Length: 186
Image 1 (cartoon, rainbow, N blue to C red):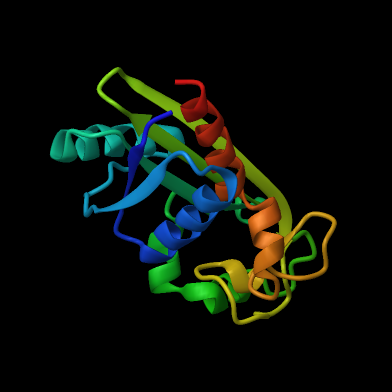
Image 2 (cartoon, helix red, strand yellow):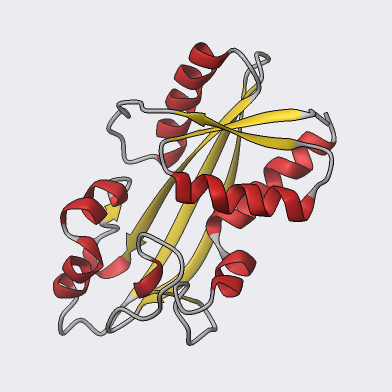
């Protein structure tokens, strides 16, 4: 396993969450932060966005690095906000999504994450999905982004109400476990 790996992100909340998972799941690799600001390509594929971004990150760092792209896909909104989730969060926030879903009974949604890893020997991707639904209102104080309105399948609490729940079921957690498993076999 690599001794040092970098997570290229401009989102310190994502880095903190990933670092906690790395520390819990492996003692062999130190996760470092690579402050990364990159103008993402526009695509409906989180995998395509992640691959292009990690290529840029590796070009700037030259060390083993990964990026993660995430999207919230809401069935009743035809998959919106999808790959535009960060932009929509900044412009509309959770309250804007709830307003779009006023009077809508089908609140089924899913989070998808794609990690793209590059170590100079090509790019590998790892995906994680968390099925769930959108709450009727914002609940909870933990987490970030859409955590106050997302309820994982089979649960009644939002991610923001239970960070332990998020760490157990989240799309990011699942994709990071796949990455860690891959790194352990390098």
